Image (cartoon, rainbow over all chains, first blue to last red; front, side, top):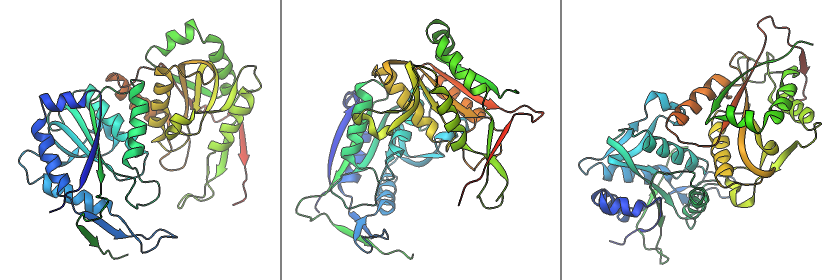
Length: 194
Length: 194
């Protein structure tokens, strides 16, 4: 079966943290990401109506459902009430690892980063243990997608600008999902009632 | 002339930074805030149509116009292109002081905080000198306002949660605008074409 391709960029020595402590969690996540079929849906955006675009909901569900078959992974983990201005829940986690799947509008990356930083600094035991690593999964720019949705190359540029100036300390591995140039990534097309 | 009331909360020793370095800038800003008339406009929100609510645009303009009559103050200061994911400009500044007037939706507080932190860490000379202090001006909850707009008490709670966990290092003075209980703050009512 053909595999989805991934690229990664590490901030604050996420690579060392994964090698020493979260090798297993990383292996489990990449196994799911590589088997990910490309989810497409018909756009309802003016100008490109009907064209196939990246389906954030379907892709998200696939990652969540498959990762949570593996022991220890949890999804929709509630954020403590005192931090509710940062959202109601985080996407996925296991042990001290937090995973956010971010296919939404680009300002959400800042929110994900700030809350990962807060949980890291506050040693919040969201997933049973204090958070020591955040993994943020994004799609590459190569996928046709709705306007203003975040893509990997943009997230990389933003986190690099912040990290270069030590704005955050939490180790973050940024993951980008890429399609094979040959276009043989398996496709799941989805029809939705409008 | 009756005065608008203000409350302040300091983070990361903003009080010491103001006392030692930015006493004059703080005096200039408070002089403008205290003379601020209460700007109201008719709501166009369902359920409260026509009721007088806080007018963010009019209040913002009044602060900007009056502060910029004082030598050294500038408004709409461009953000360097490499940080354009944090917005196009900051509201006001003089020397090493950055002022954001934030009457918009509450997620903008995080954006203001992250960019103040970035400019502080990067020693960005937005206002001629590296940023050493951020002042964020908000309205109190007591003012009728559009749904989901930020208010002082909420901003204080959010920044306190972040500061308690050392998520940011930039000295911030949070300012809240309050009305006299007697309601004798001068009122400027504004009609706009819809």
